[in-house]
Length: 155
Length: 183
Image 1 (cartoon, each protein chain N blue to C red):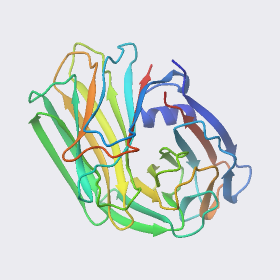
Image 2 (cartoon, rainbow over the protein chains, first blue to last red):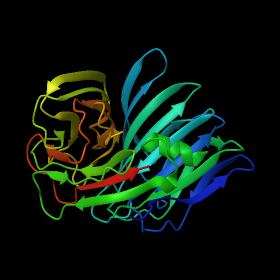
Image 3 (cartoon, one colour):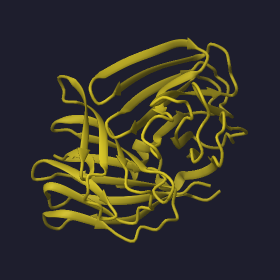
Image 4 (cartoon, each protein chain N blue to C red):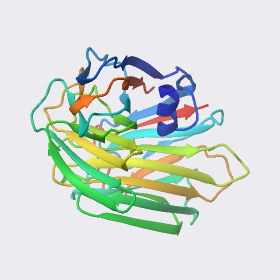
């Protein structure tokens, strides 16, 4: 049986930057997993697919801040992946290469400075394969942030 | 380090090279249930990754799982979910299946599918009950649910099969279940 969980690309920031782009993502996997470790200057991070900056993204979120648990809904211009202060976020992007369904992703955000979060996201653009992911920050991603994209290939 | 972070979060304590695809079902027509059978006992953990949508005429429907075709009252679970407005928790004991809470139904946004990652820990062990954990959700642009669950199958048998079926209706076309083994 083939080994099937593979790193596709990694970027480590040498200086603060607003966006990090993964392009020419091969369509040969079944799911993608993005792992982001680090901080932003302030505010949330989000993902955009295939350069789509429209409002075709929506999210349902569950989070706890150490005192209470909350759930809310976000309609946005990107996949919401939460705030970052020495945080680790893992975003599962399911069946990213199929051209028949909208794309669902689930993010688990572990932000030790503030909260723990699970978010499901829907990208409603006319179904197309995801070939590019841009990770953006409301402010900058800090120097030292590590972005790694993995592919999981089903039999 | 990131390799280990990803593996821990998605399945277990394993390096990425120890993650193998076992079998996948992608439905070409609506189907009542999906079963992985004759699962080899050669891995440490199992992970099932899926996208699903039910044909039931509602915005969401339940997803259930049974191990080894066991229809006895040998299942228990807890769940915590958010529906975009409130947070709730629930549990079941001595159940005849694992209730994995809800996924997308036929009345939800067209072409939207729920997604989930289900881990079955130490599935082949014959000296203890089996613990499962789940991260699952669906969003319908104004509706949706994100869910964390734990499950228990009260059997010391090695887990060699798992079935997924909706509470009502069938799994819709394009639903897909992929089974992986982790060493």
